[in-house]
Structures are given as structure tokens and as C-alpha cells.
Picture 1 (tube, rainbow, N blue to C red):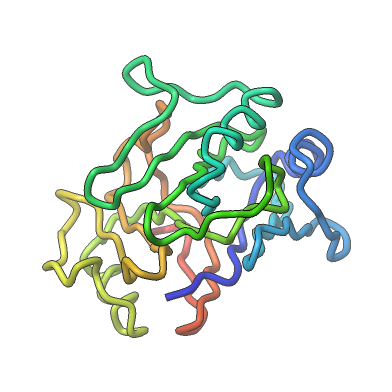
Picture 2 (cartoon, one colour; picture 1 turned 60 degrees about the vertical axis):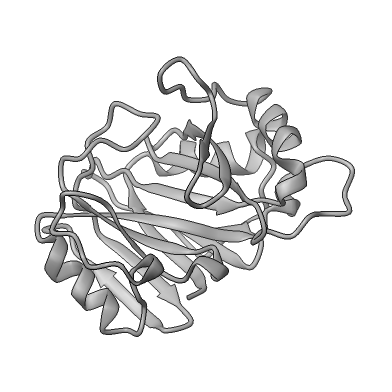
Length: 219
């Protein structure tokens, strides 16, 4: 599975767009009043202004494996990196990946991940946002994890490594390892790593090469 676009609905819209464009240096395109695309390699993260909501999301962007340290230094100059167990990065043994995290002004938990053997190396000498490869993950918090995961499977998206579906005891990583892109179905209330934020159901539109999926606020 490839994730082409995420559509996320946030309350702190203007400050968040300015953060990605002016502070972080991402290329941004306005779609009109209250909607902006953030270029993320082969994918697009679209923020929609939605007043009166307190939605936040976890999403991840793939970066070249050989630019992890450069990317971390680049981001650390512009934002405080999040910490977990007094560490500001993590290595995932199962996926052979290194990640670091930060929070944006909307409260989104943003991860940059370098997947060994999946994310290609870059010929660039250092990281800039133009080196982002694409969208790696979107977290979906649901009160009905099993049903939500089955709906994703109905689009032809398997559980990682063809494992049996969890009913919320563990995370369901929906997608193929070789594509380096996953829809993560989590139990509502489960804390997202590198934050103190419980996952909450939030309106989310995910456009993939298997079709478009809409996840509603009710979870």
C-alpha cells in the first residue's frame, strides 16, 4: 500500500501552516480559504481549518536511511524533539527502523522514520524537507478496533506480516512491510509514543493506491 494523501482537520490552522512553511521549510500550497497542502515527497498532508475542534493526530514521514542524523539535527534546530524514557530517538527491532518525534502547533505527534532496507539512501549531503520520501504512517484511534481494521482489510490492505487482527490489545499495522507505509489502528485512549497524549477518534481521510478511506470522529 502507498499513502498518497492525508486530510487532517485542525483548530490551530494558521499557526500550524506557518510552522511547516516558515519554521520547517516545507513547500506549502493553499487550496483556498482554510485548506493547505504540505508537500511530503510522494505524498501530501492536507490541513483543513475546523474551528471549535481539538483534534490531533499521529503521522509519520519516511526519510532516507542515510540522512537520519542530519534530519534529526535539522529538526532539533527548529523545534524541541519529543522524549520517551529520557531518549529523543528510538530503534524498532522488528521493522529495523530509527525514528524521532516532535509536536507541531496543532498538537500532532509527528514522526520522521528511516527504515533500513526499505527507504532508499539519498545522494544529498544533508537533510532538507525536499528529502522527505513520502508518508509512512497515519494513526487511527478507534473505539471499535477490530471492525475498523476489517474495513481497511476490505480494501486489500493486509495486517503487517499477515498476523491475526488484534481487538485493541496491540496496535494493528495495516500494510505491507516492503512499501514502508501503514495505517495504524489503535484503541481509543491508548497513549501515542513520545507524547502524553491519548489517541482520540478524529475525522481523517486517507487516500491510498487501494482507494480512499474516511474515518469519522466517533471512531
